[in-house]
Picture 1 (cartoon, rainbow, N blue to C red):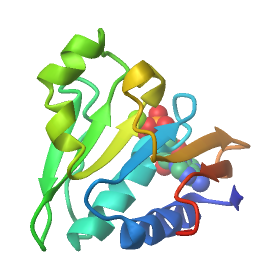
Picture 2 (picture 1 turned 90 degrees about the vertical axis):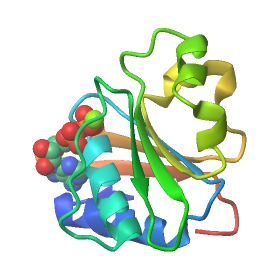
Picture 3 (picture 1 turned 90 degrees about the horizontal axis):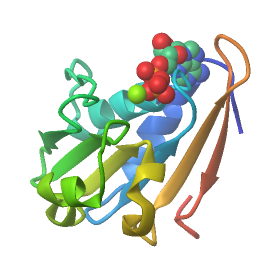
Length: 141
Ligand SMILES: Nc1ncnc2c1ncn2[C@@H]1O[C@H](COP(=O)(O)OP(=O)(O)O)[C@@H](O)[C@H]1O
Ligand SMILES: [Mg+2]
């Protein structure tokens, strides 16, 4: 699909949030500036029901967790600086998979890539437009 502007990306994120349930993983790929964090921010705001939710970049902490109104949590990972699979275990990856997880730079997961994840690939077209490809969640989208 084409996302003509940031508002379109935010609307897609809100729709995905309405479909997400515990045990789901969304893998956000694309180059720097593609909009992975922008999509994650809108997703987490929709999921928590808090349009003003602060969603800092987890690029240094690698993971940021958010309690959800109905119970449970969502975890936003940015694996750009991940050193290896051992570090991922230390971040609580296995436990996080029982909740909702969003992953930027999912290529770093290697063999730990969740098998039933939704793959969201973003590609810049110009300053405001993005091409997005969704793969996974068969029968749910
Ligand atoms: N259609 C769009 N979707 C997502 N971001 C967009 C779009 N148009 C412009 N942008 C801008 O592009 C930038 C994307 O940055 P960011 O989400 O941090 O990228 P990434 O996490 O992929 O490196 C933001 O400044 C955002 O406002
Ligand atoms: Mg980012």
